[in-house]
Amino acid sequence: MKNFDLIIFDCDGVLVDSESISQSVIATYLTELGFPYTVKESETDFKGRAMTDVMRVAEERYGKKVPEEFLEEYERRLIIDMKKNLKAVPGAKEILEQLDLPFCVASSGSHEKMKISLGITDIWRLVEGRIFSADDVGKGKPNPDLFLHTAKEMGVDPQACLVIEDSVNGVLAAKAAGMTAWGFSRETPQAELKQAGADWVFGDFRELDFNSFDPCPPL
Picture (cartoon, rainbow, N blue to C red):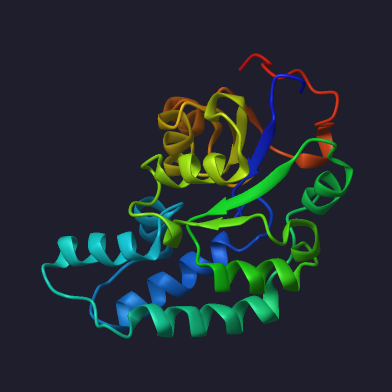
């Protein structure tokens, strides 16, 4: 890992097992509002994207506006479900506790959402003060803005950053930022992450030792 100066972790689906909860809430609520989505369709269209993009894509698909209260009500429902069901991704907390290299979190989710989800899973204490959201920049993933902003704020050259992402949009954003991207295939097919440009793909944190791992392992 000597070639990297910073590891950037995505949040949902990488550190906390919230992706399925989030997509279920999105699909259910949009359907109630007259924008029918299955959970699978929600995953395909929205995984790894900011909620402003979710609204835009739904509006383009159905040719009408999503109500203004969508974001507030979505987060209210999501928080209720997370408090009941959210857990850390197996091995994620242990990896953070063992890392010698600097690390941070950069997510399409809001700061409030991350504070809650990372707090529920006892990860917040490990990353507080090093949290970056798509809300901080003009464009979310798959655009590189969030990762470039993160590198700048952390004082690290983008080319010296390793990004851990579980979504195609996240891998695309990392590669567009000139960073190395490792695809986390726990819930996303390896082939999709590789096609998006992932430099390496793995499926379980518990199989890794980031402090001694080859910085450019083969696909």
